Image (cartoon, rainbow, N blue to C red):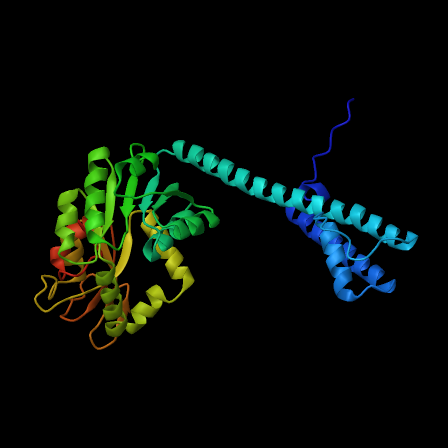
Length: 361
């Protein structure tokens, strides 16, 4: 039976360029110190000894500082030449090895990443790796979703790749960049740039390149929402709007907000609901809202399965969990609902205009 070859240990002496470089520098520095001490011990001034050793190690050869006319001096000089030049050759080789390996790693790493992107199908494209794009990529990665980040800034691209994400450096407004990201094979595109005009242009380009693509766009100004929808976005997210809703929720319904947002378990639960196409949220019953004066059962019946009510928060602060079907909803109450994404949003007229997080065409 043939002997099985042991795998090469790339962490050994010859497998680590950084270790080679460190050992080479340490060896050469030791030779310089020892040779300098040797010259000073035979009576040379320290400055002359250092000059002689450095000149010899670097093979400059400007000439001898003092006459090398004794066996001891010749022995010191020969040893300095042999060991010093050997150390410098080793250091030079380690530097070349380090630079070459770094360049090859970068080249093959990019090639491997591009190959993986070319193999993606039904994946998600994230345009922009700013604050919102970073959080989005983190959540998608945690959910084991296939995605590729498209970012123009070099530092952000490096950060995304350090996190292990597939990331292309390019302008998302350029159709070629979208092609490289595999937009024809993608399932969803999320454009989360802080520039509304860029998001509108990306939406237009993406919709023309893939008519069946689901597009979720970020908007900074409320007036941009209509433009994004007209450009072809399926959904529009207004982060500032969402933040204001969260603050209002924390002010009006403290206990419910603490329950829904204050624990990692509830955040994980909300993520599971989102993966199932459901959303949990707290909405206010405005005085002129159609749901005021109706019972829980009447509202859920009118919703026709789009959502159901799991908690009612009275204006005075009382939180009623699992409210009875015949319980009346009063003006100013907070209604905690679990809804079916798009279907629930289609019934936004039951609540105030600012109830839901996203808008659809």
